[in-house]
Amino acid sequence: MTVTTSEVPPGGFDPGEVAARPVLGFLVGRGMIARTVEVAGGTCVELLSAGDLLQPSASEQPSFARMWWTALDSVELIVIDREAASRICSEPEVLAELVSRGTRRAHNLTVSAAIESVVGVENRVLLALWQLAENYGEVSPEGVHLSLRLTHEMLSSLIGSRRPSVTSALTALGDRDLVTRLPDRSWLLKGSPPEP
Image (cartoon, rainbow, N blue to C red; front, side, top):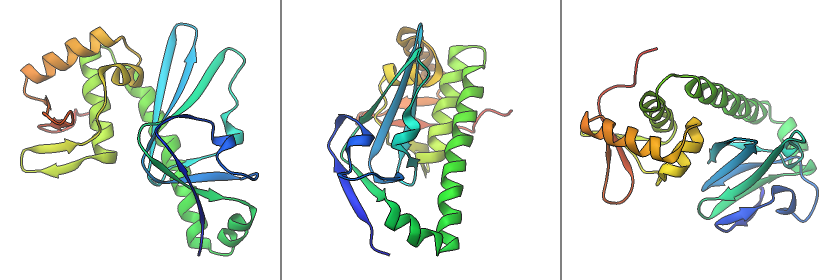
């Protein structure tokens, strides 16, 4: 099946303006996107990467919220227009996979919400890093290598905390030899994920 793609350079963008024609949605082919939602007194970030679905018309927020999209690096979006959707509907395996990916994104958001409810910033940081490691990490003899270059500010938005608290939590986790920041700004997680 041939598909149309759109390239998004790093920086802010509006998914509704990416394609020259109306689309049903996009599948992230390459790169990483941050979707930020802000309400009075709080901000939350959702990370999307290869295989995740997004839909421009689903970006409407309540009147008390503000939302924006940022390409964290060069992003390739696979366009799902009416023609592609028609072809997908004739391929049950492809349709099932797309539904599965949408469901996975919803499940990841539920896990993120559960992490935000955990008491203690140190615990929330560790859980958020393990969640990211399970989605994006690579197992190595030293531990799980997470090549995402997450800033303390972005981590604070992922867990619903303040940046200074996240910095202190990362220092404490480093002292316990659970998380190491590598020279290339990536992360190394050691041990096992926390038990439920």
